[in-house]
Length: 173
Image (cartoon, rainbow, N blue to C red; front, side):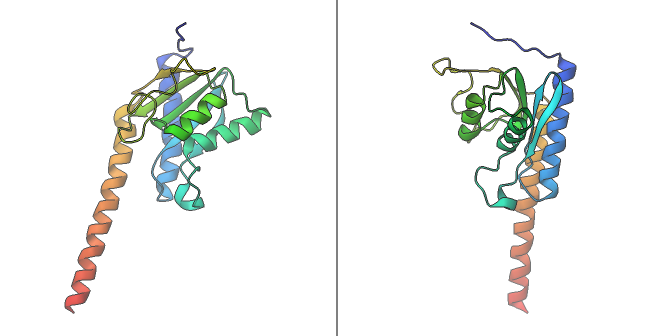
């Protein structure tokens, strides 16, 4: 049985822009800029952005936090008939949480070739051997999502390079 999207392209763009806003919140905190929103009946019921560095919690991924908020708002772990929008392809942990919370549709922006489990390394979300699987769509505002990450890591590398130069200059003095 094949699943289908319940949203228009305009709705997909709108909700991914909301996830991008969350990613920018993470970036302001010097976190990896990943953002997510959970949607039910075209309303956002959960938001999250990466907080791993801030909380020193390996599970503080954008998707996990958005799912937790959505569950709290609904008073249930079952997020049936919901959609998740996330700027980066989910990792194994987040894919597991998506399946266990019964999210119906997942939309992401950029692929994660080193850790993604929604098509890059494997595809957990559409694996019909599980008791629940999702409709999956990628490349929603892919360039913008990818550029956020590229710019962030470029800045990190530049900062490290500058710090190294400063350290070398102090040694000369």
